[in-house]
Amino acid sequence: MTTEQELEQEGEIAADFIEEFLDSADLDGDLEIEFRQERVYLSVSSEGDSNLSRISDPNTVDALQELTRIAVQTKTGQMSRLILDVGGSRAKKTEQLKQLVDRTIAKLEESDKEQHLKPMSSYDRKLVHDMVSEAGFISESEGAGKERHIVVRKA
Image 1 (cartoon, rainbow, N blue to C red):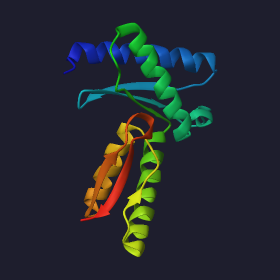
Image 2 (spheres, rainbow, N blue to C red):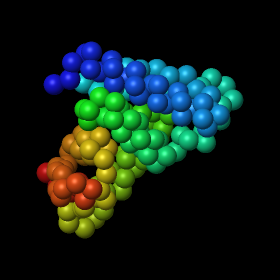
Image 3 (cartoon, one colour):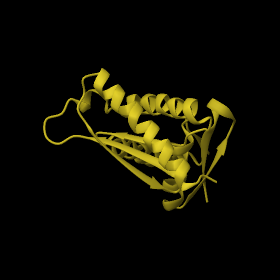
């Protein structure tokens, strides 16, 4: 279990890392740190005209999130479960996952065969499990490590 003090330290280290990254890349952004469900949520946003769009692609943000987690782990010795959002990238990613779930359920209903999704992060798998459940279907994770993926079945 992560203490509030540990989360605050993780948030500060992550914010420092992201601020240095933004400065190095000559990008403008405002940082906001939240603590929810024993995780640090770090959001980078900008008002008006912004050059943040250069790094707000969900895949780019996933890579930057991993680098930030490594920076935190290097300084604390503890694995980080930090979630990074840049310019609304999480909302974009959630929408992409929702579309994936919708397509998967349509295929499942057409074929009556369980559907295997490509491997994804544990956070994305959690979102997909929730979406599949809300749609009235069953999902479970299979595999290990980088090959861990979701299988969707009819209830």
